[in-house]
Picture 1 (tube, rainbow, N blue to C red):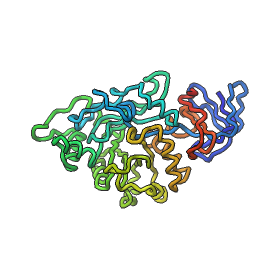
Picture 2 (picture 1 turned 180 degrees about the vertical axis):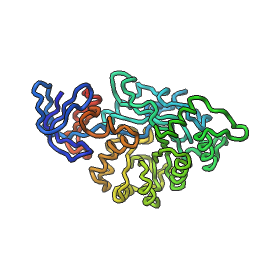
Picture 3 (picture 1 turned 90 degrees about the horizontal axis):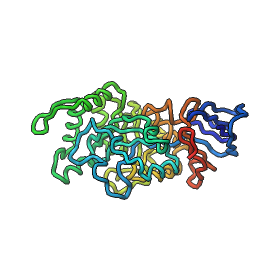
Picture 4 (picture 1 turned 135 degrees about the vertical axis):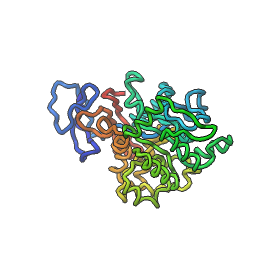
Length: 370
């Protein structure tokens, strides 16, 4: 299949008017006036072409937004620190929000543990559509996810179970991520799957992704990762302005949540709509996430449009929903930009993709028009 006459935003090179050849689910060629006369052609008539969007932190498929979590689908509150648990084992592949995701441009998601778990387990990277569930799996273990700060602490305060403090959460993380036997009634041995997971972190095959909104939690995450020698993704950062020089020096991938998220939530009280522009001004790359269902994934595209309205350049916003998350996850050889050899995950808009009124005309995942 040959897409012709598109206004193409490859992301890792300058935009141009040209064509994209798709074969066997991949981009076989991309450029101006491609000479493939025998191919089925779709004339895009100058429409805007961008890579499929990537949402780097969600609970998609674990529970439906606005509905009670189904028993067994998500991690029980009593399971505080999990390294051997994999989210892919709890995915509801028929969750309607997968379809709502791709209909709004999200072609890849990371499904991680709920955001009130200090250490929830192994995240997986999935396409939002495909021929079968197995074909949709990009990586069954893409990162190890946990949450620092009040969300995890308050959850256990409510039930009066340990950990009841930031220090308790940090101790638990340190023990489980270093395979240390804690003293006292919670002392335990570690399973083979837990040891394998920690080894993947030690050898930097996967990063540790920690949701850390407040300044003290961001610093704790950095200190913990450096102490253990792990790669780190800082998720859901909010109070980062005092740390801009440090974040730039450390060059740690970080994510910010949608401006549509409930600002009354305790961890988002210090959020300011202008802060993302300061990240760009200071040369600090970031990714945007919905944290579905905190903001439903169908609003991911609108969330990106809002960032552009708040002063972030179109180039930086597009990078935040494509190549930046792909690089943070080590998936940039397959997704995140339009280039020869990459997966043909492609969006076609009738106008600028960061104008909220632009219509999504075509969605392609692995070269298939949905």
